[in-house]
Image (cartoon, rainbow, N blue to C red):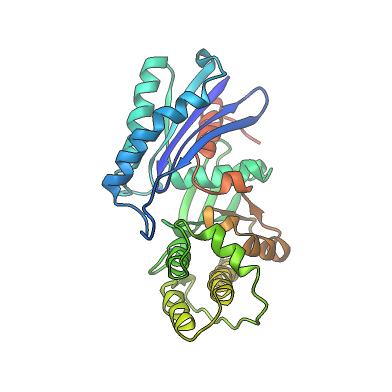
Amino acid sequence: MLYLGIDTSNYTTSTALYDSRTGRITQQKKLLPVREGKLGLRQSDAVFHHTAQLHTLFEQLVSKVDTKQIAAVGVSSVPRPVSGSYMPCFTVGQNTAKILSAALKVPLCEFSHQEGHIAAALYSAGKTGLFDKRFLAFHVSGGTTEAVLADGSGSGFKLTLAAKTLDLNAGQAIDRVGLMLGLKFPCGPALEQLALKNTERLSVRPSLKGCDCCMSGVENQCKKLIDGGKSPEYVAAYCIEFVRKTLDKMTGALLEKYGGLPLVYAGGVMSNSIIKNSFTEKYDAAFAEPAFSADNAAGIAYLCYRKLNNVHS
């Protein structure tokens, strides 16, 4: 049977199908259009673009499958699994999922965007055994920079906030520095390519408040570096190293607090090869594969399958 997933977050419209016979996930997704030089979208514009894009992606997703095989519809209806979590853009996917559920006469399962990110990381990293265990998960993107304590229940997990940013999210910092350097939003991939060309030594000293972090300082520091004549490659490398070292310090503080739990990293920022390679070597951490790290509906489709079938690893 097939399990449909829908996610309408900032800044990607996405659909996915999990095939329980093969264990494979197929995806169709598209970035929301952002005008050159602009740092993101207003929620009203995001809602409009999701509405314009979603039906086309769904048509492409199911063009070669029998929709009668869709056993359930899953959707991310809120950003995070906490009371009061809300963003208008998620209503586009939620309402579409309700319509499809009623039309196909199949169950509807609602999750948070954050749960979908973590599930996609576990699925793509081959770490689905963690669904039955306790682990630490980082969700690092343009909209979120958090670490959560995850208690697996087999078919899903309960998430408890363990640490967070006190100002900017990591993805926001990367995009702001990228725009300073004339890169196109979202700036992460291009900033990484610039950083890989840097040959100068870096000296970065981020600080924590408990286990929480502050990211806003890197924006001002990078502006000073640019004004001081530093190369774009150096500035890009400095920005990424600031984020990497901040997350490294957070990880160390959390492991000291909670003990040696397995580590999972999800979200678009964590697809950065510089950060990923460093943490894989140091912590033996699980990362989402690139196709599953940015905003996507894959984790939602997989969670829908696990929930309705009461799957235990």
